[in-house]
Length: 57
Image (cartoon, rainbow, N blue to C red; front, side, top):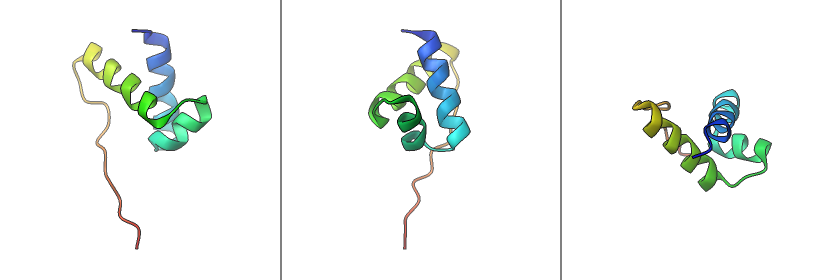
């Protein structure tokens, strides 16, 4: 695991309040951004985000 890449991804996702926008900022897929954050969560032993799935009307 590349801890720095995981932390950069966490920061981008948190700053943008969005996995999609954070991933775009870093030039990676949303799926990869999610994977990096999950790896960081595993290393820290803590959930870093509460994910809400919003429904558009």
